[in-house]
Length: 390
Length: 186
Image (cartoon, each protein chain N blue to C red):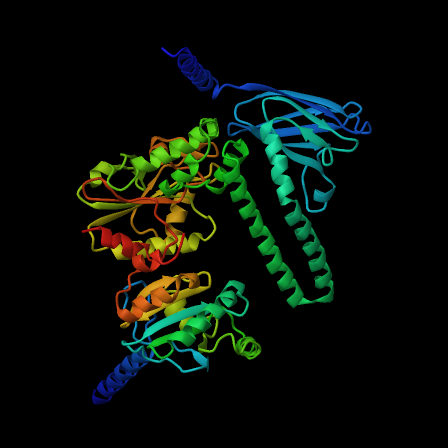
């Protein structure tokens, strides 16, 4: 028996066990600040997202010195500001003393002879990576700043051709940041920052085709709270793939009568979960009309399920149906989704959040999904769906 | 009595006449719909299209002088228009969503070489093109490109989806939206 092998195996098992216990536990952090001594008695505001939950804390600086203590799960994207105004406006935005950084578990030092804007921030690995990415962005930022100065000058001279050329160059500069980020992600698969950048680009419905990209992150990164959330989205996408049974729902129609998906068995069902008034909403409603026309002779029931922000009156549903020309079955799941994510059983079963709405599926006569992850802005979608129905 | 009958007959004939003079606006223009006639527009460059020739492929690009992405797509269309002009493919740059005809004329004068194919001015708000095409097709933003062949609307898409492989399919007659989409790398 190879003792070394046993020891390695035990070590791996123990560390995995330790990690799985520790994965979603909260870890302590402490932020120690020493800024200019002139920052005295002023409010220091810290805000950060702890595993998706926004947390705020504040303290007063004494001769530039301050301390924050707290708990975090995943490394947390944070913002710290000195003496913040009650409201940020276009006028005061440039004079704000504010800085973004990452909180890793452990000690973070914020030191400098001025405010936080110019301070050095030393913390854990994620903050070091964040700083590294900032340095990669620096040449682009410098060019964007100089282009902004040039554009301001051209505006004074009324030189529209030069403005257009400068804006074109600015767009080209901005597109470089996407390249910097994709290189950074590829070169740093073990960085939580890489995952954070990646997930911010995929906040909506995660298409299964992106799973191989996700699998390139290291197991530790994939096993974070954020990583597990992403994995759950992929798992859900598999459950909602063509051929799978569509999850049951029971929702109320405009007359208050409960309608279940199973009661529509024997007919194809095009179901679209939506919230009103997003950008290009009119194009969306027009395309639903187009889909309805394409499926009208295909033994299909058209269903739209309404979600709403909490501040909308209940009557807004009927107003929305009317102005959107939704002349088909209308159901609602008001309150099923909020800022935190999916709340109702329907929203959970179909992975509905403010980021993933609108979301639609075509369900066959047998209750199995015919098509999901539909591109609702595609003008040819109705024809494509019609071809799927035999 | 006879006078009354004549009066009724005259009114009836006038009513029928005025009804037939008014064209009933198209309600929808969806993929697969039949389309025989180009709406009334002002052709300011190239050859006017009246009735669609069922044997030709029409690639109609909706643009405006204020639309930068539309203009950015023009050199691409121009190159294709030049390549396929003798193969029964008609490219039309259809100006929409602006009322100032002179602006369009000036733009064409200043960018003569950019659009060496047919150009039409739609006429802006309340125009025949708006009634017969923009509203029924649900066009709320441009650029947008429409492909017509055999008097049918085959595809409503964006200019970057139109490439040589798509045009070859249209000429050969084996076009499908699904196949056309596959020609674009994701």
